[in-house]
Length: 239
View 1: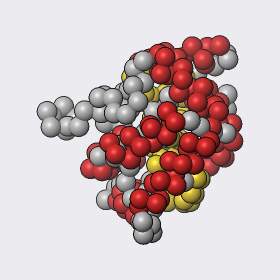
View 2 (view 1 turned 90 degrees about the vertical axis):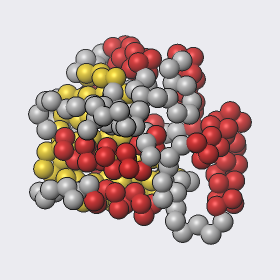
View 3 (view 1 turned 180 degrees about the vertical axis):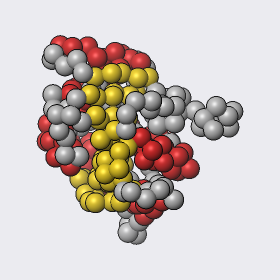
């Protein structure tokens, strides 16, 4: 199916231009400032039960912080991103920290074909929202097919609550909080995200995960509009 002309072009950049090295450096600096990256990584590693013999794949590896940390605990890491600039930046960072058991692929949810042994875990953070919902579902089915039975899937992304009565207040509160925590530029990125990207509702995300075949073990609301889903591949086929 992925060779058909009607397939969504996930290699097209939506939102911030991460094909610019200056923007990648700024992104890395900004994330280190506003996020507790070490705590987030610890949460992921505990959730997916990493071990020395494990293979883990990350979609949207970005500047490589999770991949580098996981490489110190696992057999092999596959680090994917649609941005070659991001991958080069992540590779240089990994080399500077002495981590060599990471393979890098310029690909995304729809374009990557896993040809090696089934994976112990797949992780993606703040990337799935780049796809419209049908293509999210296609991506989730692809991920399901890459995992071993019992393998873990860790999804962290912007997901909107369906329990909100006034979305204007909901989004305004989120943006105001970003302005206080970061800066006007990052707040503008959030505004663009709401307007132009494809974050979905919580009940839609949960439905897509279960329809793709996953068992949802835990759901965490980490902060405004950020949800984490810890899922496992059961023995049944995807629906």
